[in-house]
Length: 253
Ligand code: FPP
Image (cartoon, rainbow, N blue to C red; front, side, top):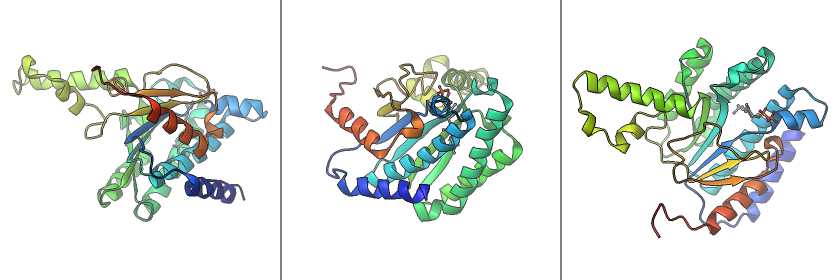
């Protein structure tokens, strides 16, 4: 019943979505506020993550339908391991379930699902699901791309890039003066992806929290008090409308 209602809401909004307006090429979201959403309802935090995962599905589909090519979410940070084991387990199980579903439905939906972050410490079965997901994604021609950042940290990502570049210098494959901004971009997990145009943070927090530090240099930020589990296509539309009103100058005049 719940999912039918959610689908109806998406379709209804899609019909009324102003199709002629430009949409950002790459939207990224810090999916925040799941715990508070659950607490307000006297539910365990894990319930907030479950509904948050459903919100992710709805918004990823909506993004694809309105022509957003890249949709990237912060699903688990390098710091989130400090949370209670039960919460971490629930999140890992949500990733497992979603990756299985993505492998089966990717071709039909036309959305390639990618996972980025330091994946080496994830459970082996999750790493296998990610590899299977990559294989399915490769088969798609011109898909929309939904990227989950798992065990992701912006500083950790830059540190790993610096290490990789330093190793190439040490091996004599390049000189320090050959290092350009592109060299750094090419050594990040997001290699091949355009930088985000719009980064949305729900739940009233106004910080970047180590998300896409290098890539966000010229991103527009949009903050809203709406908690992620309550985030609907209409909230995304508001963010896009706001984005379209801004003048991006990329350091020029
Ligand atoms: C931050 O909110 C959110 C997280 C640490 C986890 C986000 C993950 C999901 C929404 C599940 C994603 C699943 C899939 C399949 C993509 P918080 O819990 O810290 O919120 P709070 O600040 O209100 O406590």
